[in-house]
Every structure is written in C-alpha cells, then in structure tokens.
Image (cartoon, rainbow, N blue to C red; front, side, top):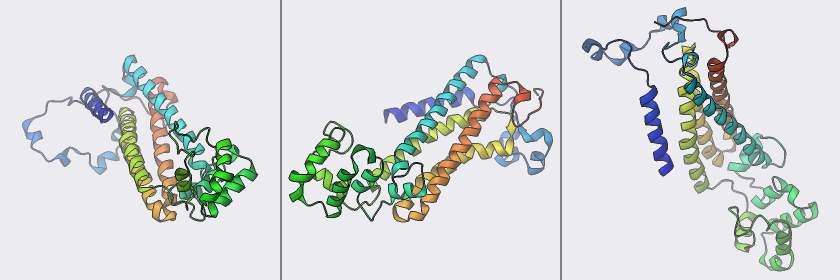
Length: 301
C-alpha cells in the first residue's frame, strides 16, 4: 500500500506540473457550454492543419534540456525493463512445453495445466530438464504417474531429490521446499494449471503496476507532434490489450482456446509501447527531417 500511495502522489504531482493550461481566457459563456462543444468535429479532423496534434508551448522538440534528459532516462529504463520482462517470459512460460520459444501450448500449460500429467512432470520436461539426467527424470516422472506412493519416498525418491533438486528447492528458498514429502506430493498431482490465488495475486500486480508504466509513457508521447487519430489509438491501445491479456489468463484457466488472447494481448501492448517510446525519443533528440512519420514545421500560435 505504501508503494501504491507513493505512485498516486507522484501521478498527482506530474499531472499538476504538465497538464496543458488554457492559453486563452476562458469566458463564462464558454464554461456553460456542454463539453462536446469543445471536441473537434470530424470535418475539422480531416483538415491538414488539424491532423497533427500540436501544443507549441510543450511539444517534445521544444522541451528544455532538463526535461528531455528526464524523460529520456525514464523511457530508456522502461524500454530495458520491457525487454527483461520478455526474457523472463521466455525463461519461464516459454519452457512450459519443453520447447524453446513462447507458444500457445506454453500458455495453456501455464494457466489451464497439462492435465495428462503432473506439475512435476511438466517441470522435469521443461524448465528443469537440464537439472537431472534422463534416467533420473524418468524415475521421478514414473513415481508421480504412480500417484507418488509414500513407501518409495525414503528408499528411492528422496535421495534423487536431495542430489538434483534440494540445492535450490529448500526451506531457505522462495520456491517450493522439496525436502518435505507433502510439498513434493502437491506438485506430483495432476497439473491443474495456475491456482485462483495465484491468478488473483498476479492479476492485481500487473493491472496496478503496468498501467502506471503505460500512463507515463503515454503522457510523454502525448507531447509528440503526431496524427491525432493515431495518437489517441496508440495511447489507448496498451490499456485495452493489458485488460485482454489479464482477462485471458482467467478464461484460459477453464477454456484453453483463450490462450490465443494472451498472445494477442502481450503483442498488442508491446507494439504500441515500442512505437510511443521510439517516437518520443526521436522527436526529442533528432532533427525534424529525420522524424518518422515526417512532420512539417508549425509556427506557434
């Protein structure tokens, strides 16, 4: 809660500092007009001069050096963070089916589960495949398929865990403690995928945390000189696809076909964020002729 409160305070300060001020006196008659009177009509959007959303006093190209450095630092760190998130997905979900790369099967195994086998079997054939030789993995998988009989634990199975698993899976680690039979039996059961508790925890972390990233990336991009329609689409896209992504986890838990929406959601907000980050960096540091898409010089009004 302390971190959430800090983020909310930071958002309020950021909003107060950079929210666009009215450059013309606001009359009493204007204040009584319905809000839609101030929205640009469709014919206006089709005019060349109105297609590019420009606020000459605070476009990215006209920012002071201080704010350019500030925004650049933030965007670069966020960009590296997104790449690390992609690498983490490749190393966790990407190994769920035992094959490199993220596939629909990886998503299904992660959320719906591999109900033809156990979590232990999925791990030994996936991310943990290199941690034990084939004959040891076969022994452990066969034990799990035989419903993990306790009579074989002390004599045959526990020594294998001690040699190949317990150096990481122990009482001092944050991952399951495999020095206890009760914990091993849980992962030896049929793999039902992510639990409701896990989905709830991961969902609220993603929705709270990632939405703040998209807020600040979109806020900076909002000062770019860009086609107004596409600017609105790009700013909104990450939030829409984040909801698609998170909701698809819950749907995939019960209906594996929705794993496709997890792939679509992640791809959608990654592309939109990448376009906004690169466009913002380009307009802050490159001369106008090198911008893409090309923008013409507009005089401040």
